[in-house]
Length: 292
Ligand code: PLP
Image: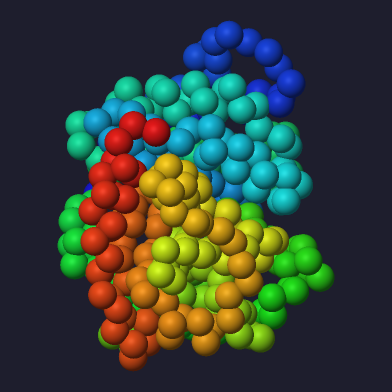
């Protein structure tokens, strides 16, 4: 899907208080080159990003996304972003989104090598059609991520809980899943705990209890998982966090991968185990498509 709109942002200091940041934005031709060849985002994947779902021009869960952008920036020791400036950038990008589903990306990189400031930009693109994964489900395979459950705490420089631009490993995991005949992957720690998917969070259902891997430094805390939990709580379900041994995957009654743009994709097979599509899936996706 071609990018429809791109906005270059001159990043403001985090504590700069202004009602209007519009003079720090510059809309550029989304089909033309806009970055310097010295950009560390492209040379080293040195930066952070967010993908925000947009439905009929309404950007979903903006606050959770800009807060997570700031958290990722902190983990990467990037200058703290000015959240109000990013909120306003999201509003400008959203006003350029077509009706239906779209995605806004926010990118904050370390900038040009030896340059004075980070580089920041936002884009808006029409979203792909996710009807099939949402309704027919997806097959996943488990893949060893190669780190034990304590790695993030022991080695914070791995940036495991940050949404960095270094997603080559995540994309390689999805290609491996495809090679194995699946649509997506679920990472396991090397000591056998369930983590997350390369671009989504995992939610499991056991009877009337819903569980997702406990947010730790090792996984990204998903904004969609938080929204689904809000909905489940309102419906009276028990939804919580736990350290989940991989052996529990075989006992789940249902499972989903959830993320901001694909939303809730029910899992119909984990490795060789077949799972039914939970009837709650339809209402979860209806909730995720409603303005949040
Ligand atoms: N985990 C990882 C590694 C991700 O990349 C993503 C989203 O891209 C998620 C989880 C889900 O996050 P969200 O629901 O905020 O999109």
